[in-house]
Image (cartoon, rainbow, N blue to C red; front, top):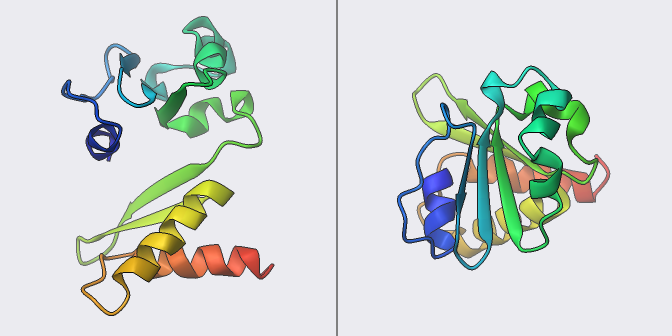
Length: 134
């Protein structure tokens, strides 16, 4: 997913997992801050690696893997994508947040009637149910 977001941002460098470096940054239309919080012990570690600064970067987009490990440090406005592997091996992306949900709905509407990507219907339904207050 991070590689695709990097391509969408026009990043020419290869976007790789920051598992051992914790944080990788890339320049594109927006600065991409890609963090793997698995090795962080909590919000204090997140602050030590500059987490608060990357979240405050007005020209940046932050992708944080294992974000549940630092949840208390994330702003209430944080949006999320949860990837799940279904029994048949396909993937389902669950999105949460106003901007991500509107992107999912737009994607679903653009591709309606064609070959839908696995899980996009669920994202559209979830976004619609949030708007309806269900």
